[in-house]
Image (cartoon, rainbow, N blue to C red; front, side, top):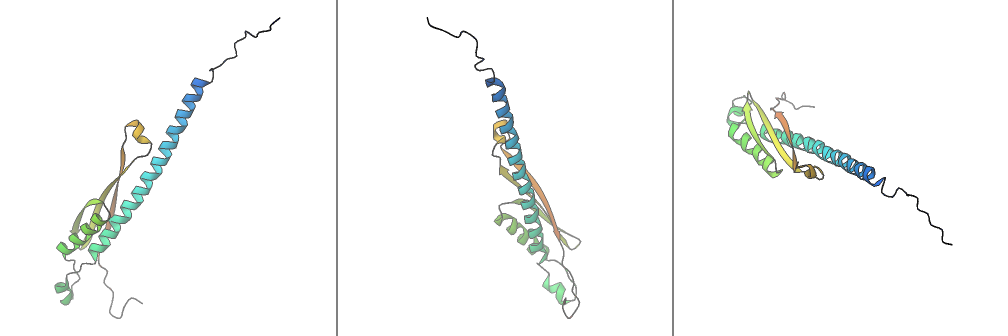
Length: 141
């Protein structure tokens, strides 16, 4: 006599919920990774904008300085700041207003996981401002 077990073993019952759970976990992982990448991009583009503003702020008008006036050479300041942005691979604008160099920068980075949802890149904007500081005769120390 051959014994057989005709009972349903429930094969595949957990397959659908497990697939949904795995997909949800992958999406959460993707959001986390791409979210961190955006935060890093924001910090990077802000630092780059600040550095570009400082580079522009160092372009002092020497003719005005000889007369005892501290002023920024607008053309050289804009060129220096834009050069710094270009070297960093960042786009942006530079304006000189009231003796201060103001830089707004924008950068983009491709996503790792969010491309699966149609989001191919994340962007971030940063801002930096610098102005010359007058130090009294005899130095700062």
